[in-house]
Image 1 (cartoon, rainbow over the protein chains, first blue to last red):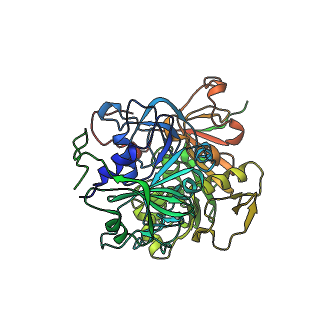
Image 2 (image 1 turned 30 degrees about the vertical axis):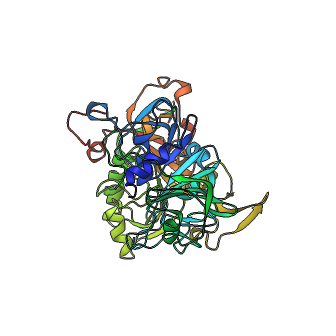
Image 3 (image 1 turned 90 degrees about the vertical axis):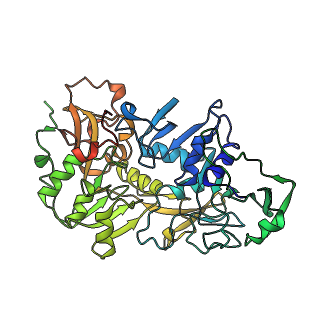
Length: 230
Length: 234
């Protein structure tokens, strides 16, 4: 049993709390917004100039001038602020956001990660990924544990072009939660049916097991009907 | 009496010359000066260097400049998969790409606009985008030097404008428009409406008129105001 993409997003959302200022990258990270606890005030940041991104609008509520970083239409949440790109990157690079959730191709045991240059993509694009990576104090990675060919994505050293060095704090995969610490990688949680040895077998870099290691507790289906495990 | 308004986009872009470097406001379709770009395409200046966050979102506006072969270089952070016209030219080797992290692009333009030569950023240190750049340690952290960026022209989009060149934006139109207004020799803005002097409250002037040379009122380029469903409104 492993998590779906929604399952990874659901689990990350459980670790975000009131007062967090969070940037969600494309892919699995942006799904996190569907699973945040709405009773808590958490601000979502969009690099094109919004702090306080609200839900996706429908029909008559669409405003052509309000888009989020993924270029889709969005709304503004209570307490939102609008600004230009310069102020937006001051928030990102200046260490003002509390968290950035990003996808990755590889994460190394020292916290290096690679996510901007996808293998086989002939036209490179970097966007704001490198600025987020050096700025936000908590870089959380959301990704599958292995590639679709079964190759480990948590590695001793990245081979793909780096996004930034030594910045990842925690890795959430479909199999496990792994912390990056000064002493190396620490396995915190794993999906039911996968003991630490099974997770290690799918991980290139060595994992220490946290003293409070536990099974990940995720429901089968989310409140919105999405499947969380498969 | 100061009057920076012009009646047509064609007139506004008439001074653009072959080989010019031009900054384009916009992030996605928000704040993209579609009618000015259309006029520039018809004007036909060639060998342009384009400074923009992306490379357009389809065959219209920014994408059409690549489609028509008018650009020789793009300085950008994210030429998205939807920027098919740029990608085709790039893959044929007809357009050069200078890829810059988005925050570095913004700050290079800011420096260009406020009289600075450049700055040191932690962004990109130890990556292939840092190749060959000067790295300096400041208070125990490594930073990469990035040089200021200016251009000959800026084509911008505002919501409201007045004869002084003051601009006000709405929603997420501000994006690159505000910083680009400061960093170009000639700054041209298209707006949804030119209003009488004084109607934009001083506290609502986002881009002060000192930075702006020409303002043109336009209907938005139809391709930039497409909605996912009928019945929705702007």
